[in-house]
Length: 72
Image: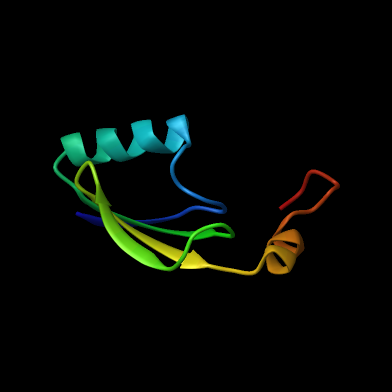
């Protein structure tokens, strides 16, 4: 199975996501992840067999994604 994960934030580090990726790959799945960063630049790289697609966004835009009332 081909799986695309979408992460609200930067990767790595996120231990829960790392463990999920490892489990999915160990189960024979093809895994890719889309995430964003405010510090780096656009990039595509391999992380332990998972293709990571990272898109840079402005710091001001990140604030639009974060709600202070605990909801997303």
